[in-house]
Length: 147
Image 1 (spheres, one colour):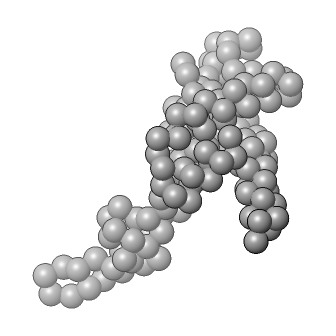
Image 2 (cartoon, helix red, strand yellow):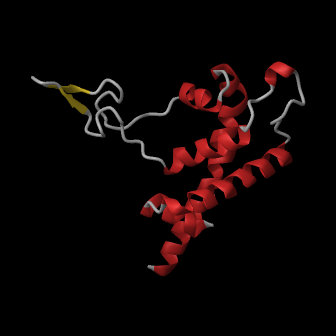
């Protein structure tokens, strides 16, 4: 699976997206079961995550790691050209790179921001993105061995 992840991230071979997504999906489901995460309606009705929560969580994680962070408004240049002058892009503040916020992540997942911050922010950063840290470690170890 590490090879497919490396090809997806570094070579842009999107034909491996489905396989990597499926692996991440199953890892999240397994991790959630081991750590006792509530994905369903085990608790009160208002805390029930939307349908396909694990599916969206896997897609968000893969988008964070593999997806392009280039600003769509200025196309990564950092400046917007009007007819007369150039000005810093107001979406990326002139950096050319979009910063994903916690509000964006909560909206993508279909939950409120305070729910994201309280329940999922730490889990997402530590546990779910940790899946990709294992991939990156294996890639660097293999490259070091071959070079």
